[in-house]
Image (cartoon, rainbow, N blue to C red):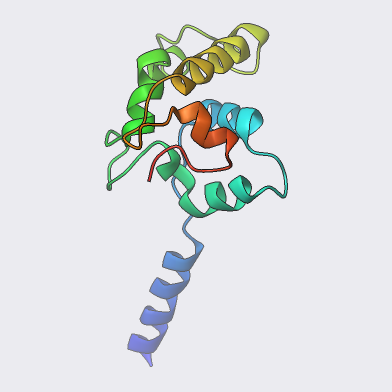
Length: 127
């Protein structure tokens, strides 16, 4: 009975663990810019979660879209003690996030299309 209880407790912990997301400001800005409620892209983003920009098991592992975004947006500007934007929801930070994502749109994916073309077609920017 103890083994069953332990197994059940472990199962509950595993199933209740929250998925890992990108840092909230980047994730929120991406959704605000590209994900419309009820759109096909919304379902795809909800399925892949942080893998819109990341791949592998560590946050530092970025896919091609994540690498493009990281050319224009730096995590350190939005998090940590040395952050550039004290109020991430403030106008300056929101403008910087929107501009960074817009700049990444012009970068080409391995498919030959720009990330902006993929997003406008309702596709994930990277696989």
